[in-house]
Image 1 (cartoon, rainbow, N blue to C red):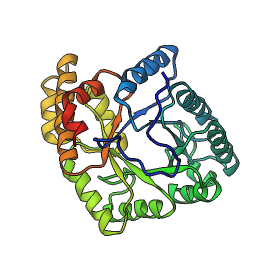
Image 2: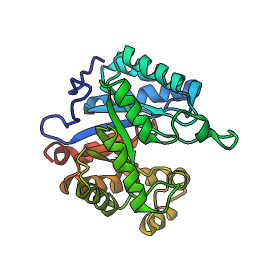
Image 3: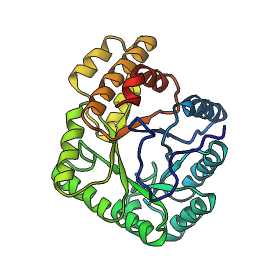
Image 4: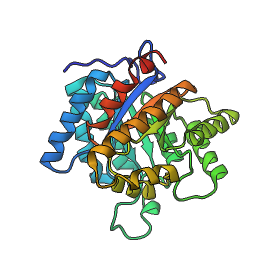
Length: 302
């Protein structure tokens, strides 16, 4: 494939290619052979859109991240894309995290999205306390000090982290993650753009200047998005649920509606100054290419 990223150094600020905002895609490691085939087919379908980076999620804690680490290496070596490795610290020892970071360093991976992560299902209470870092902030600081060449990303929650109802406190946590050494942030998905712009404006008032990329989740599976919204704390507006309730048994109409709504959302985000678009692909190639084709020259001249 031989695609060469526009990103040349690990600490260089993400910027879109000439004439457009930044573009990025997020994938998750497949668990079954059929899922692996779908993953690579989806990646192949999205490469022509020349993303500024792709990111690979991971499982929480220790050995669960080894499989995603190997996938990160393969993506980086086979495609030449600027590849961002997600790394969670929950329940993991300093030695385990150091080994993963050294692995990425040796593979030439330029960037890490440093996350606390959620305790693996089935773990007894206290998983957060058993790891070297209870929260993302000290984990970011550790990576910045021990592996200074990595470009570091962190998660942002415009509607607040699902574990807190205090938006002010949650934003303070975000600000401290940035101050600990983060270079950019990617938000959880949302459907009301005002939520994103209020969050960004508030961050800027507090002196946070790193790029905050909006996370876009095309809704092509209503049951799935309901489940994900509950896990992630992302609100499903009434107008969205009403529209999907009418077509919940029609997959093709759901796909078309998901594309239409995402195009509308992306147009508004770009028009109002978002630095780029980060798509949660869910390893599916149906929606995102259609969205980018619909945006067309609007995206490339934004």
